[in-house]
Amino acid sequence: MDHFEYRDGVLHAEDIPLPQIAEEIGTPVYVYSRATLERHAQVFADALKDIPKKHIAFAIKCNPNLGVLRVLARQGYGADVVSGGELERALAAGMAAEDIVFSGVGKTRAELALGLDRGIGQFNIEHEPEGVALSEIAVGKETTARAVLRVNPDVDAGTHAKISTGKAENKFGVGIDAAPAIFDRLSALPGLKMRGVALHIGSQLTSLDPLEAAFARVGRLVAELRAAGHSITHVDLGGGLGVPYRPEDNPPTPAEYGAMVARVTKDWDVTLMFEPGRVIAGNTGVLLTEVLWVKPGAVSPFVIVDAAMNDLARPALYDAYHDFVAVRPTGEKMTASIVGPVCETGDTFARDRVIDKVAAGDLAAFRTAGAYGATMASTYNSRSLVPEVLVDGDRYVTVADRIAAGTIMAAERVPDWID
Ligand SMILES: *Cc1c(COP(=O)(O)O)cnc(C)c1O
Image (cartoon, rainbow, N blue to C red; front, side):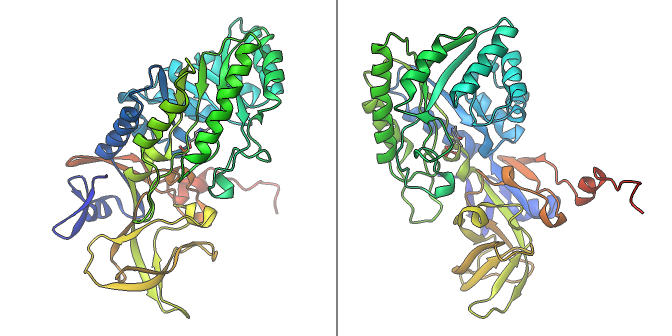
């Protein structure tokens, strides 16, 4: 369910007609719906109602916009961050340090120190040397880091290889068989309070089976760690729940996920931590674009839009599908390839797809662009950095400005020793 609907034949974000935003802000532009975001946050939290002790940390890498984060902070969400920059964003958006979880396979010593200085709630340690470094830094600061060990359960998440993270050959976590010995050694270090384990097996999962298999393995590990005398109070189950990108997609619902988690973890007696990203933000945004040209092609015509792979990278990066709809559909259809202006064939959003018939000058929207959209934008081809708008009922605000190519160029210089 979302709040992007046609009224009188015109696509709206809540009460705002998208042509108004195109007119006032220009295109391409990301448009987010506050009501949709709040609804998704609420549905996910409701799905976990049978879990007695829990903590939800939004994986802010999927949409780190401050306006978006503030909405989620008000819903009681904390943040899962993967860099010092994200950590500062979560705090700037009003999330409590206590509610911040620091994940990521390549945290620097400076980032670990920053997390300690800010007093974040938990570090998810990815391998033993990182834990040793965290211990040293914490001792130096006369503080204690609350930490869990991320394990790699070696399950196939059944998702795109580039967003699969829980196979033995992936870079994340420590092998689950090696985990007990590493946990023993880390627990003995000063400045570190090892309180549990974490996992995250991948993103855009369309079946609960790999999650259930991974959670069951972690449940056995928790029992093993307790048998070895460790106090295990927290298990972080990561994120990964998929969203429907195509109309016919039917991923598991948050309610089904919550029921599975409650069943698998019922005897664990821990605080369960969750790191949802896409399932919260995916359907809360669209990328609004204008058709620049329609050009004949050998197979089907090219609809050339003013958004490109630098604004929405997922199709080029993971062959991802985003629904493409006309803002003022006529009811007629056409078969076309949708491409952007960037000088790469990879700058293709769809190949030979049946879409709403559009012509030059028409507005259109890529749906389900609220997660892993603007956050991955670049200025490739010296294009501007795409702006973001947050709609709330009949009002909206530009929550991220368009950063002009000239502003980016102004940060560059030519050495005076050339010529
Ligand atoms: C990316 C990521 C998430 C969020 O994944 P989604 O598929 O967006 O839910 C959660 N935890 C970690 C550690 C991640 O890297």
